[in-house]
Image (cartoon, rainbow, N blue to C red; front, side, top):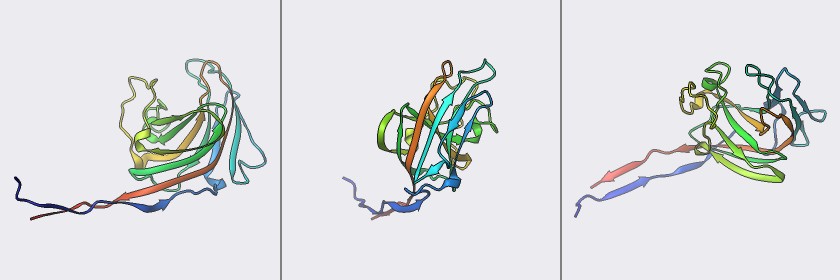
Amino acid sequence: MLSMRLFILVVAILLSGCTVASQTLTPNQWRYVTDPHGSQAKYDEGLVQNGVVSVHFTRVPRVDKANNSWVELIYDLPQQLTPAFIVTLAYKSDKAVIVKLSQQEYGRLGDKSYAHYQSVLPASNSWQVVRLSLSDFKRPSWTPEWSKDKGIVLEHISALYFVPDLKDATGGEATLSVNRLEIEQLRLTNISVKQN
């Protein structure tokens, strides 16, 4: 029988962390990119209208081995993510949506594999609310063998990418909308232990 008594004085997660973005979407944090091979993005007068981001993408098929096509809706993070972040997202899309953590190690400034950590959300023609945390993101199955996995480096993540799951070989069309993006930055407190 142990003679020591263990008292945990504080074990808590503070839910009063910083909210990076709320239900009111900020236009200057949203943008899109398409390839130079003919893919297109169409939207109303502004990318954010009446609190909703909505884009109709047309992606052309991959051109050749050296030239791929792409369409991406991008949310630029106003501050660095913490290890205990939670993304709450309300979206609808007629194709599955790949949510990517845009990290420099795997992108244009890194190994150029573009095999970012990602989470795949199902297609939905009605608004769906999902919550994503760090553990929901994995590297894709197509990651090249030569792309060294350096893990998720939070200070090197600059944006969240929302990509309709259109295939390289065929391209295609998709309409993607977001009306809520909220990021809770949770802080872990220290654990104090008292022994007698």
